[in-house]
Image 1 (spheres, rainbow, N blue to C red):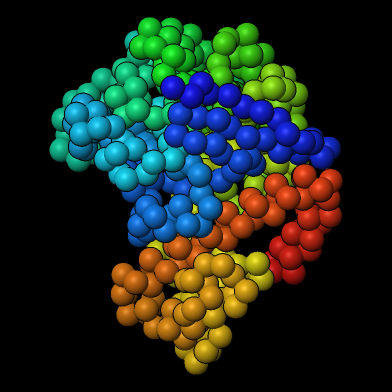
Image 2 (image 1 turned 135 degrees about the vertical axis):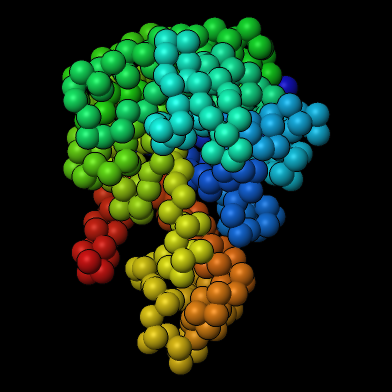
Length: 375
C-alpha cells in the first residue's frame, strides 16, 4: 500500500507547487477537485473527467450514507470501484450538509441527530461515525467531523462551534487511527474553524497543528462572506499551520478566488460552481464567462475556444450550444460542464507551470486584468 505523502516541489512567494502521493495515484498541486457529491460528477462520464486532467474528485458523506449507504458501497468494492474512478478520492465529513439542515437537526456534544431530507428517517452522525463511513467508502483523503457555523453569527456562537470542532477533531483522529487509516495509506485532515474572527481562526489552527493530521483544511468560508474577509482569514491562518503539510480551502470557488488563495499558500480546492454553471448555460473560458442563453449567440458559428484541448470547447459552435440550452437538451449541460471542468483544470496547470517558472505574479496580474475587463 502506497503511504500517503505530500511533497513541496517549489515556491514562488507564498504560492506553493507540490505533489500528493496516495494509494490511488499522484495529485499535482495546486489542484482543483470536481465535486462528485453522490458518486458522480454531474453530467459527465468518469473517463471524460479524467481526460480534463483532474486527478482527484470529491464525494459527500451525508448523501452517500443515506443513499446507497456506505455499507452497500463497501460491499460493492468501495467508492473507487463503485463510481469507476481509479484515481484519488477525497470525502468531506458531512458537517456542512448538516449545517444546512438546521430545521431537521439536533446538535449535542456527542454529534448531530437529524432527519433525512429524502424520507424523514432518523440518523446520528458523530465524529466516529463520520470517519467510519469514510473508511467504508475507502476514500484516500478524509475530513474530521466539524460544525460549520453559518455566517453572520455572534462571536459567542462562532467560538462555541470552533471549540466543539476541536474536540471533535481529537475524536475523529482517534477513530481514524483505530480503523488503521494511516496503514492503509489514507489521510485525515483537521478543519480550521472560527468564522470571520481572526483570533479564533488563529487559535483553531494552532490547536489543530498540535494534532498529527496528514493535512489541514480551512472550512467555514465561501458561505457568503466578502472575498476580502476570506483572504484576510487566509493571510492570518496559513502561517500558523505546518508548512510541510497540505492545505485545502473547502468550497472555493471562482477562478479569482483560486488564484488569490494560491497566492497565499493554498494547495487544493473544490467547488460546485463549474458543474452548476454548466447545467445553467454558463461557460468559463480564457476570455471570460460566456452566457450561452444570450440571444447574441444564436447565429455564432465560432466555438467557445478554438485552441482548447477540450472537444466541448473546440468542436461545437456557440450557436449549437445556445440551441441546446434554450431547448433544455441534456447534451447542452453535458458539453458546458465538460468545458468548465476543462477550463478549471487548464487554469490549475497554468498556475503550476507559473510557480515552477517563478512567474506566478505575472500570471496573477494577467488574470486580474482579464477579470477587471469582464466586470
